[in-house]
Image 1 (tube, one colour):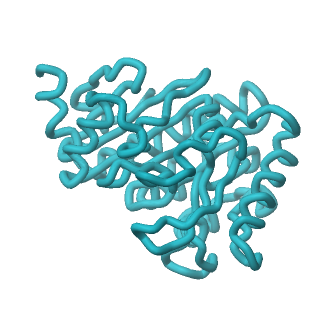
Image 2 (tube, one colour):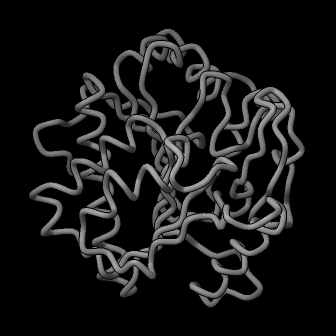
Length: 265
């Protein structure tokens, strides 16, 4: 992975839980994310003519998008050949500042030459979240042509909460153990909110799965997710084990602060 002048200050192996690249600060992390995005989608388009991407919400992906909307990426990324989905979403209108897709569209996708028909936000305008999940799964199968098998994303971007959740797979929820559906709608009691999320099998089918994690508040849980015992009900980020792809973690130094102790470094 090429990250220009903002390369990692160190790289740590977490075995089957992935490779960890540590960056000096949040800006270097965002720049590395933009570089990884550009490289992965360009390779996918070269190989298959289309890049299927699942975006995530959060501060780092937002900054990544701002960088991608500017040069040199704006001119170099094959925008017209990218199909955008989101790995999870809040049950709020696109116009809301809480909408992952809405924020990405306003700060990033509206500024680049992507085909509007290839931007696929969750259909939150529908009357029912479960129906929206089914419609989204159908849309995904239509776009990919995969009617029976699990569709394979070229790039799945993920974040991790300070409780160990990823996408909208939260500790103690049934969605953590979903094995059949591609997309799940569920009520998250700790948030008293409805969330839509890709299921573990859909996430794990990705060719390239990239976590973006920043901030000191996540240092302890990052250590536990990467190097602690398996506790997927408590730490759903441990669910991410690609079935045939590659798993990488791009993290800033603050989030990585406790990894040296875990690895004996």
